Image (cartoon, rainbow, N blue to C red; front, side):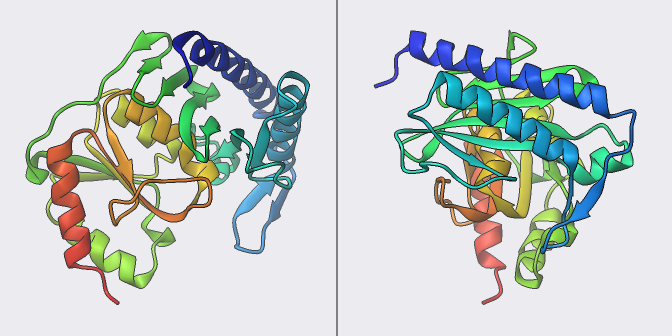
Length: 264
């Protein structure tokens, strides 16, 4: 059992990692980074690697027994009780383009599940910190998700429909037709504002655990719900589709539509 004091100590350390990431991003953003492309076509910069490398060094010095699962370097001890899950720049393409929705995602998994998360947005000086079923804060102030009873009243976000395969696109389009409005391109910022009660649903595909562990902790800390498109919980070995909602009503409505329109 993790008590409140231990949780706060982990949160303080996670914010120190976020401070490191913020410093590096603010130092680098005025200078174009060297860009490479991974085998899946996604971009990566030297800054991605610098941020993750510095965060790893700090974790290894403070918590040598903890595991580390990051986007840019080899996993370490991912079956440990506590594992740090790192995405140094979530939204590398927006970062390259100078569109300020990119951020750093820092999460602490406990027994393979999301526990604590930080969504750090250096370009806008915004930071969300949350622990599942305990708390969520935006720049130090408590935040909560909002209630929305019907999909036709819901504001939904999606990072990029190009990431969805043809089967997912059919289901996504069916859900899209039922909501009031869809906002695209927010990357991890979309999940942060859901936790703050500004939106109602967030949906994406083709993601990895390092893309979602911090948002899961923050949203669940704010009273929201996060799962895959089948209603299954996210764990450290997960990859694929994610659905986040501010309340149970539209979460269940969205799950039903997604299930009814999946193409085998």
